[in-house]
Image 1 (cartoon, rainbow, N blue to C red):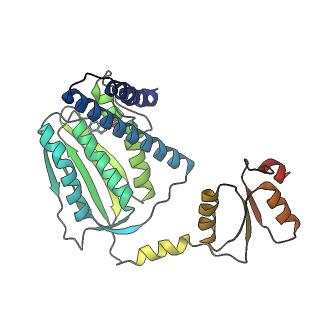
Image 2 (image 1 turned 180 degrees about the vertical axis):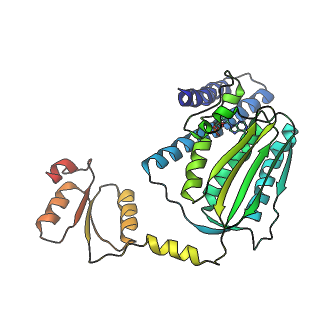
Image 3 (image 1 turned 45 degrees about the vertical axis):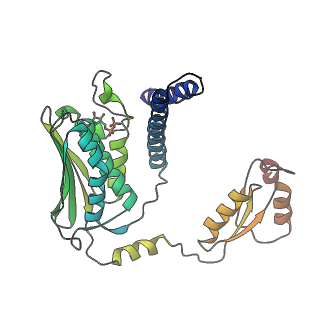
Length: 305
Ligand code: ADP
């Protein structure tokens, strides 16, 4: 219900203000306002779509995380730059705490997801804070770094501290602007942190503020772990395997060929069902046939039969 509301609201704004733009007689100032609203709503819509795609991929178990050595001080600096405008606009101070030297402050994680989790927590901190400050940074915790984002905002009732990590869950603020959003951000963050071998948790006091923490494994090995990880992903084939790929869309066919061939499989491409049947009947080896459904000459169902 919330998702459909969250999609319709910016969509209506985009359609409505686009229509207004094409009408004659509006002042330059009004037109600027219309365009700004359209851009803002489009970005909002894109953010929601990204969340939905992320959560779908997480649920389908098809998230591919990389494990790279990351020096976190640089990233935290960029986050500070990124959020400084919001901090100034809202009159809420933003502080960064990076106590370790660059060489010490290194973790093993997926860079994009790490930034996504951190941005999401900082974004929430601003969203749920009316005055005061937002602070973010990390502390050393044995073989992990413990990252945190702390705010002086409205806080979270104690009985809901674990629920907020559930999909779609939002504390009920009686339909105020605080209920904007999908309620997916924290659940996505939790999944990513889990997958990267860490933990995420929150301490909060209603009326005083909240601190979100997440841990990630430190990296001291100078690149060793990265190699282990990459080696694990390489498939070791016991013999040659042959894939027949029937697909009339050239781009799709190329893409699948590149994916499969890079793992060491032998791929033979054909353009339609009839060619697939012909190839199979020729007696050439086929371990697996990947057959598209909609194809010219003979469709996939018939070819398979
Ligand atoms: P969304 O922000 O889209 O609602 P999230 O999954 O990011 O979704 O957050 C879920 C809920 O957790 C929020 O709706 C809010 O009730 C609560 N929450 C998250 N971060 C904070 C925070 N810093 N302070 C207070 N409440 C928070």
